Amino acid sequence: MRLEKNDTKTWKTRVVGALIVGLSVGSLATMTAATPESAIRSVESLTSAPAALDAESLNQGFRTVVQAALPAVVNISASKTVATRSAAFPFSSNPFFFFDRRDFGEFDMPRERVEEGQGSGVIVSRDGYVLTNHHVVGEATDITVSLDGQREFTAELVGTDALTDIAVLKIDGDDLPFLSLGDSTAVEVGDVVLAMGNPFGIGQTVTMGIVSATGRAGLNIENYEDFIQTDAAINPGNSGGPLVNMQGDVIGINTAIISRSGGNQGIGFAVPAHMARGVMDQLIAHGRVARGWLGVSIQPVTDALADTFELDSTAGALVGDVEPDSPAAEAGLATGDVVVAVDDQPVQEVKDLRLLIASAGPDATVDLTVIRDGRERSLSVTLDELPSDPRIGERSPTRGETLRGINVQDLTPQLTRQLGLPRSTVGVLVADVAPGSVAARAGLARGDVIQEVNRRAVNSTAEFDRAVGDTTDEVVLLVNRDGRTRYVVLD
Image 1 (cartoon, rainbow, N blue to C red):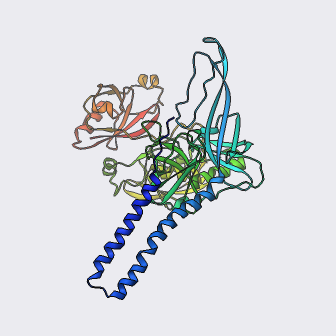
Image 2 (cartoon, one colour):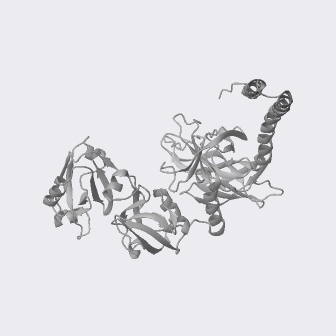
Image 3 (cartoon, rainbow, N blue to C red):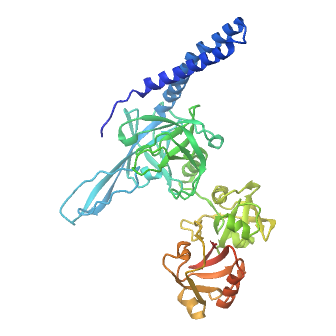
């Protein structure tokens, strides 16, 4: 690694000072013509001294926060021994966890190697609980936590949650520094934040930036996403370290970056503190995280879907499928319902419903506000526990611009058996999709079963042709694939 010296601190101080002095002189010049001399002297006393005072206050402000917070930021070394063959050395594709390559023998002979990685964490309680990332320690057998590069502790893995990428460690020691978890729901875009950790294993490092966005989701980084986005530099090795506000509270756990090079490009993400706290509390109490489960497939409400369902807005989560015998099915939730609130908490988008249901927990009874056929109604649902591998979950919407390129045929009982569909399945079978067509780009595939066209059931190719023939604008298809249904919009 090549390090280049750049005296940016001195340069920035000079620029700030010049700007402040320039503003002061400009203000005096403007006021001189029409302002009494006594007033000018008063303005001079208010503009000269505060300039230096504000610069010093800004400098001391960051220093104070860093000095108070940094002792609680820890470096984490994790390792595990895995069986492999000497010719195959699978390196992790995760840019935040680095492994050492160890060659143990001859070509293609079964051997063992040690995978080692480094990350960051933060102590969040006086008795030594440490928050970090699942991808840093989730599969490790030996974990070492070091403070200030001096004190080292062998850490106990309390538990991990892969769905949020949060893990909890426990260390035992005296006079352990710690940071409090702040109110991440109060974070706003533009807030100044500090990212702390151990990037590239070089040692404790602090970077500064602002909150670039809140509530980021749909990135396919984790299953449950509600990220704080920041431009504070986050690099490999920062994973698990804290994102700290100007009060010295942890508002997030640094987790991921978007980068073309693997290094910082000003787009980093942190799990908000309120989510990390909920996960930590369950891991400490039960060793695992239990989430509420509704049993539906949901998708965003696009403009086209809003028009089709005659909705006033795109707010809410559209139910594309309902799992048989699920809490949703028992409560009467149906395909085509749009969930707009949970216990009077608004659902603006898909991630809101997922987070509200998950956080409610198993056995909780919640009231869903749904829009069905243009009318609002309320349904009471008693949630179950989220299965470890739920068969139905959120899926990304598909898009299309024309029906050209798709051929359908009647769905016979024989075809129904071959496809493994329930005998009660109705619709038309997609027999062929032209490669490169808009239908193909929309995600339609051979073997799909189209059950509705613009919310009208189709049981034969004749009905399908009539339904499509009546359409001059968007076409909304209800598509069954492998026993699961979802809506596809073609224009």
